[in-house]
Amino acid sequence: MSVVVRTVSRVVAPVALAFGAYVIMHGHLTPGGGFQGGAVVASVVALLVVAFGAERWRKWTHALLPLEDVGAMAFVILAFLGLGATFFRNVLAGSGGLFGAPVPRLGPNPGALNTAGTLPLMNWAVGLKVIAGLGAVVILLSLFGREDG
Amino acid sequence: MTALHVLTLTLVVVGAALAAWFRDLLASVIALAGASLLLSLEFYLLQAPDVAIAEAGIGAALTAAIYILAIRKTRPKEEE
Image (cartoon, rainbow over all chains, first blue to last red; front, top):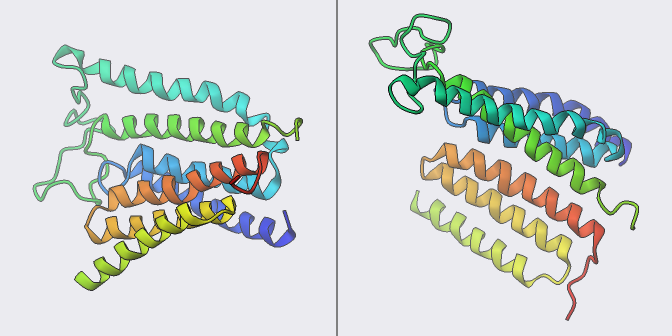
């Protein structure tokens, strides 16, 4: 694409990546979550593919496809962690560790970030899977048929 | 507030009708993306920001990108 499109993409892409990461990492407290933030990051991938051409992102698909499996496996393993009580039992909540801080008396709010137990970890797993899956879809779809015209 | 709802939903219907009416598929996809963006605004007005983010990301950005990539590989005009 033209110099204007490439320059604007260079400016917009880091901001949109930061917003996607924010939506994923605060998914348990604010609107959004793994799927929404992953879709935002995947739209950044689409922007980069349109601006810089699909060829230079071809090698990324080899990294993205295993990452999608890692995200899915991490989600299922986190769900199985609670199998002592029930499937999806939140074993980390209230346990006092990094993600298990006690919930303040006023209730969960953006100031008390680490109170949700396994929910942020599950959001990260879903976000990883959505980023890898949709990013690989966009890159591969823009590569297919290039040779056939 | 009601007038804003009526305006937004009317524009969503207009965008969807334009997407079905255009013969140029690229213009049709852009009309669909505009309708999607307005639908996301309507979700926000109805106090569902979670759905609004998903609709803006998937409906307006990714679906349009995938449709345009598909159009680039095929014919840009609909056949009679």
